[in-house]
Amino acid sequence: MRNIEVSAKTVDQAVEKGLQMLGLKRDDVEVKVVFEGSMLKKAVVEIYTFADDNERQEYLKNNKKKAEVKLVKTTNEEEIQDISTEGVEEVTKVVTEFLENLLKHMQIEGAVSRGIRNGDIIFKVSGDNINNLIGYHGETLEAVQYILNTIVRNRVKDYHKKVYIDVENYRRKRQETVESLAEKMAKKVLTTKRSIKLEPMNSFERKAIHYALSNIEHIGTHSEGNEPNRCLVIDYVD
Image (tube, rainbow, N blue to C red):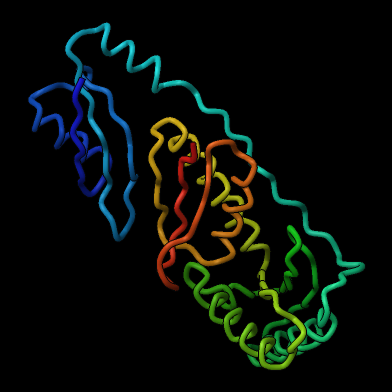
C-alpha cells in the first residue's frame, strides 16, 4: 500500500488531480479528506493505492469504521434569576442603555432582554426591520459587540467575562450550523486520525464547537491565529 497527498481548490479537483498523477480510476483507490478547503486555503486529500484486494480490504477494515460522535448539546436560553458573578447587574444596566440608545439612533423599534446560554450572559435584541444591526455575515453585530465589551471592561471593573449580543436569534442559528459542522468534522478526524483546521470563526462560534466536542473520546480542540482570522482546530488525541 502507498499513498500520495494532493491539494487543489476543491476536494473533487484534488482527487481528479491525484488520479491523473497515478494513472488510475476512482474505483481503484481509497480517498481520505484531510482538509475540505476554505476561501483562503486549498483542499487536501490523501489517495491510497493497493497491491491487491486483500490489502485493500485490510485497509478498509482498519480505517473505514463508523465513528460515533455525540455532541454536548447547548442549553436553551433561560431568563437569569441568580448569577453570583460580581458586576452582572451593573453590566446589564450599561449594555441595555447602550443598545436601547443605538436602536433609537437607528430609528428601530426594538427591545433588549437578558438571557443565559451555557453559562454565558447574552443580551438579545428583537424588533422590526432589525437586520441592519446584523450586517453582512454578522459583521455589524460583531462590531457592536466589540464596542460594548470595550465599554464594559472600562466601566465595570469587577466583571471579567465576555458579553455576547444576539439579534433575532442570529447567533442561535449560527450556533446550530457550526455544531453540525463540528459533528461532521469530528467524525472525519476520528476516521483519519488527522487534525482538521476549520475556516476563521468568531469567538462565540469557536466556543460553541469547543463545548459541543468536549465529551468525545479521542477528540480535542484548540484555536490558532489572531483575530479576525483565528481558526479552530479539531485534533485526534490518543
